[in-house]
Length: 265
Picture 1: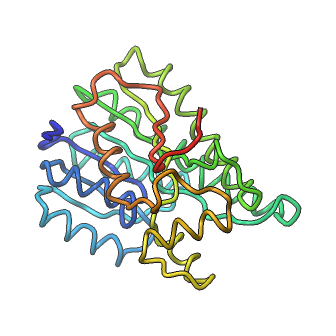
Picture 2: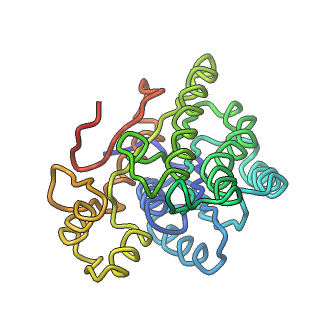
């Protein structure tokens, strides 16, 4: 499918690995100019080299901490100068990794989860809005999580932060509708990310086997999907890339579950 993004500009926050990188790959394959943002220079350099090889004419990796408003503002100021003040696509794929039961989490852990999981996205959208509004077309996609609809007792802070992402995105879709800027959410299910694979291996499961991974999720979290395997990052990236592309011309304010099947309503 031609996503209609050739020479369009895209920022993927959390784009150095996992689902963010998978999204960036789809856009690069169709010739978008992609900036991947993260905290680790080596990871971003590897991602940029791959994206350039896939066809992104101006791929760039930028180091920034989304918890630092000054860094976020500086990041988009730099991109504004690089791209003539316009931005077509913004994807926020970064998120918190806070794990712990309600009784065990400290105030600092709650603050970290919200700062990493929701406020980072808020800072990015706020800084990007002048560039998005200047572009002839623009889209925003934010990553939430299936746990906002299917709770786990060891993820209350993570889930609360992701629920904020979903709610804020819905509000943004209303706010930006007059500008015809489309805002949507992707809620991944159990995906074979580095974090989930690492957890599986810590409990003696082969994280590289998506069937074993899903069996472990069902056993430990009680959240099996209808399909018998975990999802792959590329399966999330394809959906996010469509939503943030020009091919999506009328969907906004939606929360798309990509979860292998569930009882969501």
